[in-house]
Image (cartoon, rainbow, N blue to C red):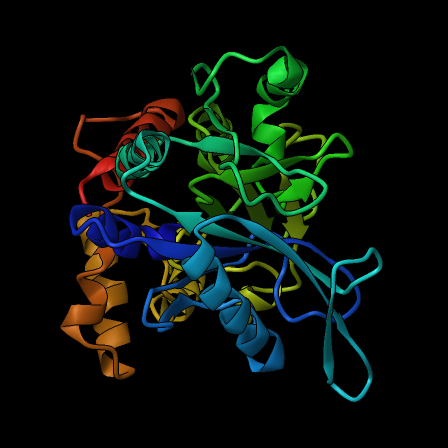
Length: 348
């Protein structure tokens, strides 16, 4: 949804109606997972993808009819071993896809998508719930709700109340869960800021830092080459604790992407340099390295000699943390997390 946000906002401003295709359920080797979306415009050009190939072509063809008739439609596609697609409205298909006509003259669409746009811009985690009927319906629109950890948007309904209660009680357990279809016909999609923190170094600062990162809602991974420092007894609140043989090939053990915050707090300059050289080649959103200015300059000079540029080094926060004159491990951890929050919340 985040990738399609600009398209939805532009379409809303221009009152351009469109069809949005969403994978409700998949089985077998279908290329995209539940929740994958594609927008099909009136001229049948598309934004996003639900997997490409023949399935996508069939969806676009079906979307032309939805554009004409202005209602939602549920389609099931069966892929066989020869990659041929047969379109059926029966159970057992490899892909179950919802094709929904979005009419900006409908106030419910304005409110629903307006709420979603605002939540995403405010970087607020939320879940959407859509009531999916058993078959297509030519005479009505889908009922939808938006649920945050503390808020609820949509019509009051006893039917959805128990599901909303369950979602709130387990809100952050849904963080990394794909969209799913409940037996009662409710389709649940999660929209979380999937920000993960990789703390490389499990010493005193790493331990306090991991606990603080969990408190502010990050998915936390701790890595160290010493099992006595990297174990679940020492780090009993984080999602992952990984013992590595050395500080080479970090990405073999943890996924680092444009959502990632990486904090380098190893026990030595040489290890810090080796790790930093690897992390600067990733898309990490935040890179921080602990140490004094003298240590930083020594590491930076060695990296420049290895072929890195000044623009590479400008991505690094070092000395790490906001300058609050921190001294103890606890205070240093607070300054680091404060800087990470500053990066997390700054406008795009």
